[in-house]
Image (cartoon, rainbow, N blue to C red; front, top):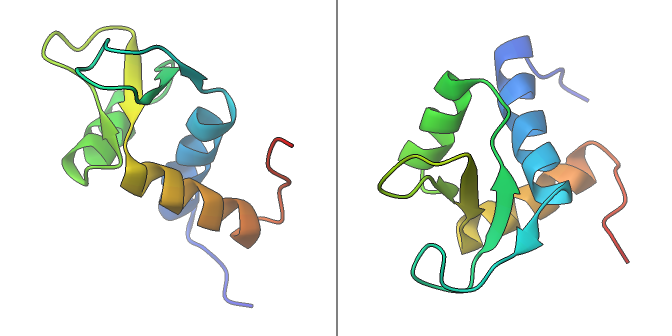
Length: 87
């Protein structure tokens, strides 16, 4: 198995943590997306937003929405790191 470099691992594991701590709040971001708190490195948050895995919203509030692509990425990362999803 190839090792993941530290910078990539931080980004991937941030996405996993956001996925695992998500909750649903309808219409906050204009649709029914899963929401998570953003107590993570802002550079990584910005990268994930730029890559359309999350959305920060117009006012860059304390929470972000996880996009459909972000959900797919998170689920594949759970498999990569051998982490169980919520049942």
